[in-house]
Image 1 (cartoon, rainbow, N blue to C red):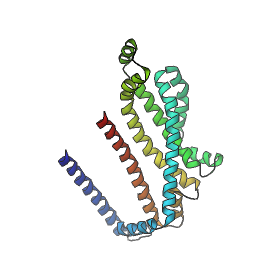
Image 2: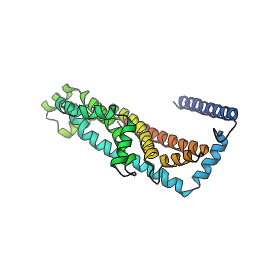
Image 3: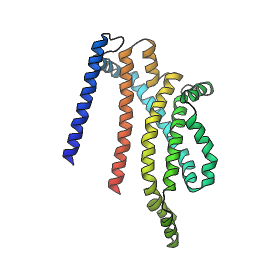
Image 4: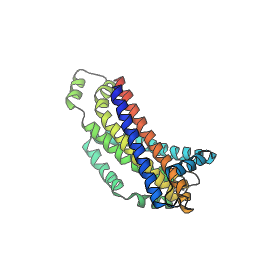
Length: 250
Protein backbone atom coordinates (compact mmCIF):
# COMPACT_ATOMS: atom_id res chain seq x y z
CA UNK A 1 0.00 0.00 0.00
CA UNK A 2 2.81 2.38 0.84
CA UNK A 3 4.49 1.59 -2.49
CA UNK A 4 1.29 2.43 -4.40
CA UNK A 5 0.94 5.70 -2.52
CA UNK A 6 4.57 6.54 -3.25
CA UNK A 7 4.09 5.96 -6.98
CA UNK A 8 0.96 8.10 -7.07
CA UNK A 9 2.82 10.87 -5.27
CA UNK A 10 5.60 10.80 -7.85
CA UNK A 11 3.08 10.95 -10.68
CA UNK A 12 1.38 13.93 -9.05
CA UNK A 13 4.73 15.65 -8.59
CA UNK A 14 5.64 15.00 -12.24
CA UNK A 15 2.31 16.43 -13.36
CA UNK A 16 2.84 19.53 -11.23
CA UNK A 17 6.35 20.08 -12.61
CA UNK A 18 5.06 19.69 -16.17
CA UNK A 19 2.34 22.26 -15.50
CA UNK A 20 4.92 24.75 -14.20
CA UNK A 21 7.17 24.13 -17.21
CA UNK A 22 4.27 24.77 -19.60
CA UNK A 23 3.48 27.96 -17.69
CA UNK A 24 7.12 29.09 -17.96
CA UNK A 25 7.29 28.33 -21.69
CA UNK A 26 4.08 30.26 -22.40
CA UNK A 27 5.30 33.19 -20.26
CA UNK A 28 8.62 33.29 -22.15
CA UNK A 29 6.73 33.16 -25.45
CA UNK A 30 4.50 36.06 -24.42
CA UNK A 31 7.56 37.97 -23.22
CA UNK A 32 5.76 40.41 -20.94
CA UNK A 33 5.27 40.24 -17.18
CA UNK A 34 2.38 42.67 -17.53
CA UNK A 35 0.46 40.08 -19.54
CA UNK A 36 1.68 36.76 -18.16
CA UNK A 37 4.44 36.64 -15.52
CA UNK A 38 6.43 33.46 -15.15
CA UNK A 39 6.26 31.08 -12.15
CA UNK A 40 9.35 32.49 -10.42
CA UNK A 41 8.22 36.12 -10.60
CA UNK A 42 4.74 35.10 -9.44
CA UNK A 43 6.26 33.21 -6.51
CA UNK A 44 8.25 36.27 -5.48
CA UNK A 45 5.06 38.35 -5.66
CA UNK A 46 3.30 35.78 -3.50
CA UNK A 47 6.04 35.96 -0.84
CA UNK A 48 5.56 39.73 -0.71
CA UNK A 49 1.81 39.29 -0.27
CA UNK A 50 2.29 36.72 2.49
CA UNK A 51 4.52 39.12 4.42
CA UNK A 52 1.70 41.69 4.55
CA UNK A 53 -0.65 41.34 7.59
CA UNK A 54 -3.65 42.32 5.44
CA UNK A 55 -3.09 39.11 3.44
CA UNK A 56 -4.08 36.98 6.43
CA UNK A 57 -7.02 39.21 7.25
CA UNK A 58 -8.45 38.78 3.75
CA UNK A 59 -7.70 35.06 3.77
CA UNK A 60 -9.35 34.42 7.15
CA UNK A 61 -12.40 36.56 6.36
CA UNK A 62 -13.03 34.70 3.09
CA UNK A 63 -12.68 31.32 4.82
CA UNK A 64 -15.08 32.44 7.54
CA UNK A 65 -17.60 33.57 4.93
CA UNK A 66 -17.36 30.17 3.28
CA UNK A 67 -17.78 28.32 6.58
CA UNK A 68 -20.77 30.44 7.61
CA UNK A 69 -22.46 29.88 4.25
CA UNK A 70 -21.73 26.15 4.50
CA UNK A 71 -23.07 25.94 8.07
CA UNK A 72 -26.39 27.54 7.12
CA UNK A 73 -26.62 25.36 4.00
CA UNK A 74 -25.91 22.19 6.00
CA UNK A 75 -28.44 22.96 8.74
CA UNK A 76 -31.28 23.84 6.36
CA UNK A 77 -30.41 20.91 4.07
CA UNK A 78 -30.77 18.52 7.00
CA UNK A 79 -34.12 20.06 7.93
CA UNK A 80 -35.42 19.75 4.36
CA UNK A 81 -33.43 16.92 2.78
CA UNK A 82 -34.20 14.22 5.35
CA UNK A 83 -37.99 14.84 5.46
CA UNK A 84 -37.98 15.01 1.63
CA UNK A 85 -36.36 11.60 1.45
CA UNK A 86 -38.88 10.16 3.90
CA UNK A 87 -42.01 11.72 2.44
CA UNK A 88 -42.82 12.17 -1.26
CA UNK A 89 -45.24 15.03 -0.51
CA UNK A 90 -42.56 17.01 1.30
CA UNK A 91 -40.18 16.41 -1.60
CA UNK A 92 -42.78 17.64 -4.10
CA UNK A 93 -43.43 20.73 -1.99
CA UNK A 94 -39.79 21.80 -1.89
CA UNK A 95 -38.93 20.68 -5.44
CA UNK A 96 -39.87 24.04 -7.10
CA UNK A 97 -37.58 25.91 -4.68
CA UNK A 98 -34.62 23.65 -5.42
CA UNK A 99 -35.21 23.69 -9.18
CA UNK A 100 -35.46 27.49 -9.17
CA UNK A 101 -32.23 27.92 -7.20
CA UNK A 102 -30.32 25.44 -9.37
CA UNK A 103 -31.58 26.94 -12.62
CA UNK A 104 -31.03 30.62 -11.81
CA UNK A 105 -27.67 31.93 -13.13
CA UNK A 106 -25.26 32.71 -10.29
CA UNK A 107 -24.53 36.14 -11.74
CA UNK A 108 -28.24 37.06 -11.51
CA UNK A 109 -28.37 36.06 -7.86
CA UNK A 110 -25.21 38.03 -7.09
CA UNK A 111 -26.50 41.17 -8.80
CA UNK A 112 -29.78 40.97 -6.88
CA UNK A 113 -27.96 40.22 -3.62
CA UNK A 114 -25.83 43.34 -4.10
CA UNK A 115 -29.06 45.35 -4.22
CA UNK A 116 -30.72 43.59 -1.30
CA UNK A 117 -27.85 42.94 1.14
CA UNK A 118 -24.79 44.55 2.66
CA UNK A 119 -21.65 43.88 0.63
CA UNK A 120 -20.15 41.80 3.46
CA UNK A 121 -23.17 39.49 3.41
CA UNK A 122 -23.34 38.92 -0.35
CA UNK A 123 -20.56 36.24 -0.53
CA UNK A 124 -22.09 34.33 2.40
CA UNK A 125 -25.52 34.42 0.76
CA UNK A 126 -24.13 33.25 -2.59
CA UNK A 127 -22.16 30.45 -0.96
CA UNK A 128 -25.27 29.32 0.91
CA UNK A 129 -27.48 29.30 -2.21
CA UNK A 130 -24.84 27.40 -4.16
CA UNK A 131 -24.33 24.66 -1.57
CA UNK A 132 -27.89 24.32 -0.25
CA UNK A 133 -29.55 22.53 -3.23
CA UNK A 134 -26.59 20.18 -3.71
CA UNK A 135 -26.58 19.06 -0.07
CA UNK A 136 -30.38 18.82 0.10
CA UNK A 137 -30.63 16.67 -3.03
CA UNK A 138 -27.89 14.31 -1.86
CA UNK A 139 -29.35 13.93 1.61
CA UNK A 140 -32.78 13.19 0.16
CA UNK A 141 -31.30 10.61 -2.24
CA UNK A 142 -29.40 8.95 0.60
CA UNK A 143 -32.54 8.61 2.72
CA UNK A 144 -34.39 7.02 -0.22
CA UNK A 145 -31.70 4.33 -0.47
CA UNK A 146 -32.35 3.09 3.06
CA UNK A 147 -33.41 -0.56 3.07
CA UNK A 148 -37.11 -0.52 4.04
CA UNK A 149 -36.87 -4.17 5.05
CA UNK A 150 -34.27 -3.36 7.71
CA UNK A 151 -36.49 -0.61 9.10
CA UNK A 152 -39.49 -2.97 9.34
CA UNK A 153 -37.36 -5.66 10.96
CA UNK A 154 -36.01 -3.15 13.48
CA UNK A 155 -39.53 -2.08 14.40
CA UNK A 156 -40.67 -5.70 14.77
CA UNK A 157 -37.84 -6.34 17.22
CA UNK A 158 -38.55 -3.00 18.92
CA UNK A 159 -35.12 -1.54 18.28
CA UNK A 160 -34.78 1.95 19.70
CA UNK A 161 -35.23 4.83 17.27
CA UNK A 162 -31.74 6.21 17.82
CA UNK A 163 -30.25 2.80 17.07
CA UNK A 164 -32.25 2.58 13.83
CA UNK A 165 -30.96 5.99 12.84
CA UNK A 166 -27.31 5.14 13.61
CA UNK A 167 -27.25 1.59 12.25
CA UNK A 168 -29.66 1.83 9.30
CA UNK A 169 -30.00 5.43 8.13
CA UNK A 170 -26.44 6.70 8.67
CA UNK A 171 -24.66 3.94 6.66
CA UNK A 172 -27.02 4.57 3.73
CA UNK A 173 -26.75 8.34 4.02
CA UNK A 174 -22.97 8.47 4.45
CA UNK A 175 -21.74 8.01 0.83
CA UNK A 176 -24.32 10.49 -0.46
CA UNK A 177 -23.36 13.01 2.20
CA UNK A 178 -19.64 12.76 1.41
CA UNK A 179 -20.31 13.11 -2.32
CA UNK A 180 -22.55 16.10 -1.63
CA UNK A 181 -19.96 17.71 0.62
CA UNK A 182 -17.19 17.40 -1.96
CA UNK A 183 -19.35 18.88 -4.71
CA UNK A 184 -20.90 21.59 -2.53
CA UNK A 185 -17.61 22.74 -1.02
CA UNK A 186 -15.98 22.93 -4.46
CA UNK A 187 -18.77 25.00 -5.99
CA UNK A 188 -19.46 26.96 -2.82
CA UNK A 189 -15.86 28.08 -2.33
CA UNK A 190 -15.70 29.43 -5.87
CA UNK A 191 -19.09 31.09 -5.48
CA UNK A 192 -17.97 32.92 -2.31
CA UNK A 193 -14.95 34.34 -4.11
CA UNK A 194 -17.04 35.34 -7.14
CA UNK A 195 -19.42 37.08 -4.74
CA UNK A 196 -16.49 39.00 -3.26
CA UNK A 197 -15.18 39.99 -6.69
CA UNK A 198 -18.53 41.53 -7.67
CA UNK A 199 -19.71 42.94 -4.33
CA UNK A 200 -16.27 44.29 -3.33
CA UNK A 201 -16.29 44.08 0.48
CA UNK A 202 -13.33 45.73 2.18
CA UNK A 203 -11.45 42.48 2.81
CA UNK A 204 -11.51 39.12 1.06
CA UNK A 205 -9.66 37.09 -1.56
CA UNK A 206 -12.12 38.12 -4.26
CA UNK A 207 -11.76 41.80 -3.35
CA UNK A 208 -7.98 41.55 -3.58
CA UNK A 209 -8.31 39.86 -6.97
CA UNK A 210 -10.51 42.67 -8.23
CA UNK A 211 -8.09 45.31 -6.93
CA UNK A 212 -5.17 43.56 -8.64
CA UNK A 213 -7.11 43.37 -11.91
CA UNK A 214 -8.06 47.05 -11.72
CA UNK A 215 -4.40 48.08 -11.45
CA UNK A 216 -3.23 45.45 -13.99
CA UNK A 217 -1.16 43.65 -11.34
CA UNK A 218 -1.25 40.31 -13.13
CA UNK A 219 1.31 38.56 -10.90
CA UNK A 220 -0.65 39.57 -7.81
CA UNK A 221 -3.90 38.39 -9.40
CA UNK A 222 -2.38 35.00 -10.22
CA UNK A 223 -0.93 34.80 -6.69
CA UNK A 224 -4.36 35.30 -5.11
CA UNK A 225 -5.77 32.74 -7.55
CA UNK A 226 -3.17 30.20 -6.44
CA UNK A 227 -4.06 30.90 -2.80
CA UNK A 228 -7.75 30.31 -3.57
CA UNK A 229 -6.92 27.04 -5.36
CA UNK A 230 -4.77 25.89 -2.43
CA UNK A 231 -7.50 26.59 0.14
CA UNK A 232 -10.07 24.77 -2.00
CA UNK A 233 -7.68 21.82 -2.28
CA UNK A 234 -7.21 21.77 1.51
CA UNK A 235 -10.98 21.74 2.04
CA UNK A 236 -11.45 18.79 -0.32
CA UNK A 237 -8.54 16.86 1.21
CA UNK A 238 -9.96 17.50 4.70
CA UNK A 239 -13.29 15.96 3.68
CA UNK A 240 -11.41 13.00 2.19
CA UNK A 241 -9.47 12.60 5.44
CA UNK A 242 -12.70 12.64 7.46
CA UNK A 243 -14.11 9.99 5.13
CA UNK A 244 -11.08 7.74 5.68
CA UNK A 245 -11.26 8.23 9.46
CA UNK A 246 -14.96 7.28 9.51
CA UNK A 247 -14.38 4.21 7.34
CA UNK A 248 -11.48 3.17 9.60
CA UNK A 249 -13.67 3.72 12.68
CA UNK A 250 -16.48 1.68 11.18
